Length: 424
Image 1 (cartoon, rainbow, N blue to C red):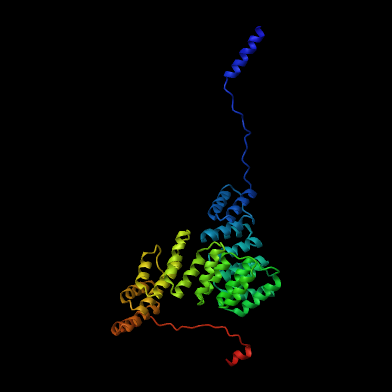
Image 2 (image 1 turned 180 degrees about the vertical axis):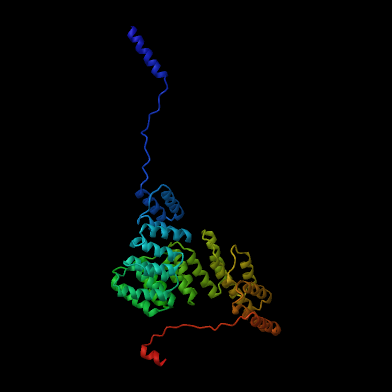
């Protein structure tokens, strides 16, 4: 009986005693190593968070881990994305100190970093100083020239690639097409197109978009449509390039039809698409349609930038609604640039809005006092209104401040042979 009583007491004590929480196995944090830091920096730079990548790099240096040739490329890419020239120069100096600047991966990243600043002279200096160059380094320099607005240098560098027997890929062809489009060299662009047909069995999306853009910039809209129709897959860039091309080349009806067709197919539009549609409305005088498209941007959460306001002001000015255009540029959230003020000034001259013309001309002259076009526009507006004294006053003021009228020029490519060109 005593034993049974003792067992009951122990059981009752156990029931009254609070249960202890179950202990979980404690996980120790993984020790920080150079490999883990390299993976972290590369992941942050690749996922579009360059500031965090640079912070992780600084933390790595503070902990005493020396970077290697795997660390520096994402760091340099992050410097270019953040636009930090000082940090880029420091990273460059660090690569020289560590002896990693001769590595092809680091050298390519340095070229891309300086090209993205943009600092093309330093990028080319690095390129020329390399003893060994691979296809990635050549392509980086070529893309830098093409995207940096130096198409002639891009084509000259491509000739060097051919001499060096560098393997050409789709990225090289995209850069070449960009350069040909900037120069308006449609014959060279056709040659690149033929080379792409021979080299690639299927047309990559980026290459198809580059071909459409090149033909559009060269005024070859039929060729652009042929490439567009033959593309196995199209994205917003494909549609936008064709819409902008038709809008800028005097075919606004086709541009707006493509815009509506794009909406019907469920392709999500971006700011470039709306820019092409607004430009088409401006060239065709469809102000109400432009207002509707302008309002659609707000409804879809697409930020209206300065170029969209410029197209809207141009549409109003061409339709004779100059005062509305003036009110638009005065009420828009961003400061107007010379392009939008110049288009409104031209509309003021056509429709005889003297007060608005004088206000806009003064703003343009204060922004660029050395440009003769703004003085001449105001003088011509005074002459059209019969105010010849004011026109002469403006021309006299130009002589006082030594502002000369610059001659205009145009460039055109002729499909003629060398012998025929000598006769021309």
